[in-house]
Amino acid sequence: MIRWLASPAWDQVAHYRRLWLYAIAILVMIILVAPTLIVIPMSFSDSKYLTFPPTGWSLDWYRTFFQSSTWLMATKTSLLVAVFTVLVATPLGTLAAYAIHESRLAAMSGVHAILLSPMMVPVIMVAIGLYFIYARLELLNTKLGLVLAHAMLAIPLVVITVLAGLKTYDMNQERVARSLGAPRWLAFWTVTLPQIRPAILNAVLLSFLTSLDEVNVALFISGGDNSTITRVMFNSLRDEIDPLITVVSTCLVLVSVTIVLVVQLANRKSHQ
Amino acid sequence: MTAASYFTGSAEAGSATALQHDERRERLTIAGLSLPALLLVTVCLIIPVGSLLALSFIGAQGNLSLENYQRLVDNKAYLAIFLTTFEISAVITIICVLLGYPLAYFITQLPPRAVGFAMLAIILPFWTSLLVRTYAWMVLLQKQGLVNSALLKLGVIDEPIALLHNYAGTVIGMSHIMLPFLVLPLYGSMKAIDRDLVRAAANLGASPIVRFWTVSFPLSLPGLGAGALIVFVLSLGFYVTPALLGGGKVTMVAMRIQKSVALYPNWGAASALAVVLLVVTAVVLLLGLWIWRRNRGNRPVMS
Image (tube, rainbow over the protein chains, first blue to last red):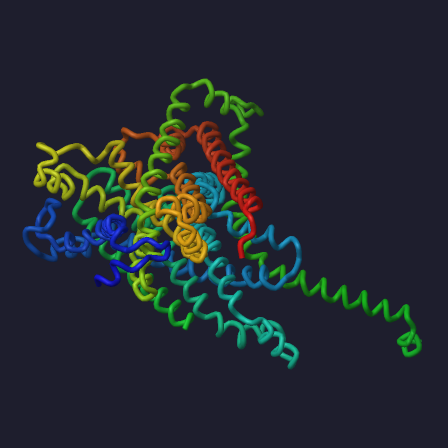
């Protein structure tokens, strides 16, 4: 330890002279992680008021959650929409990534830019624009409308992830399969796809999470029986800080943590 | 005839063009695979944004006019909203830089095994629901919340201070949400710094402070700039967090847009505001890209 403290860091300053900086950094890391984790113990509180640490423990809020038809319906909507978002965005994004990677047409850089544009446009503009168009297409408050919107938002993620996967893959393998007589789709399906599977898995998980956590667009275009969890949550947060939200938050945090850990582990494995 | 022409030069040229045709068709077919995704983005993004653009030029009487933009210029309230938005975004960017720089630097010092863990601290919040994180800050910042009770115990304050439903709450919550967007690109560019350059500067007798400001810091600037730009631009268009943590006392552009649409349907005003927001975002991004390209061009080749 002492040797480490005296040893130079990469910028040739002994570690002990940088300790104040490291202290700040660790504090920042705690600030980053702690607030989201704090909702988990609070969801098991027996109190009507949000105090931390909770004075007693109970599963009351979970019981309330599972007895509330509003929340159950919203959960069902959100999960269904997230699953269908994955089913739409992953194949579409993967095909597009393959096209961008393989077709040497000059126009493809333009296509690439268009497919990444959902990340650039301010999300509030996307939301009200969709609200305006959906009102005319009668897609407001429908699951179909939500799925299409969320899939559009997830397309850039899928394209980026799958393109990164294709870059580490040797396309000659697919060419060999084709020169041996396999049609392109078969060569892709049996040779390329299994090797970019980690990238596709990332794309699947991250587009699921994108849809599940999406608020801005859902606030405008979802409603009634097809309200998402995030919409119900936003509306109840505007009125008061309802402890029931800790239950919903805990579930959302656990889904995020699981997905991030799976993605990280899969990435590490594919790097080795 | 075909057998004969097979051996002539002109037919050879013909088969070469046929090959070129084949290749072109092949490329077009592959390019066509991106059509479904393009269609989705067109229907759900380009047409909606295009309609807003068109709406913003249509006046109250359904005529072509600039009145929606004129209103933005004439009404001082709009100017105030834009100024507030810029100010909050700038403050958040500065806070993120101040907190993110030490963090990114710290991660570059860690052994490879620990880097994965440290990155989790950035990636986990990044992928946690924005609404959950906003809610967590509502709980922490309320009058009887953890922050207030900690400050009371430490004797920093005598009575609970208002941290929620105001400017401070908005800035705290949004900085927390934006921080990963700064740290990720910054860490990338810090990691890529050629350590021999710093070593060389040290060997030539430069003090730690001189080394930092003349070698490490300039080389980390592309990542810092990219991160700061992303934070600033995303903050400009933010809706959810300021709407919940600002408690109506802080009005940012996105909240005004929402109000124009939901409260008193005024599509002209809402779309004009959205178009201005989009243009400002694009200008800031292009400016950043331009500065980045210029700097990259000017920097001496180091390899």
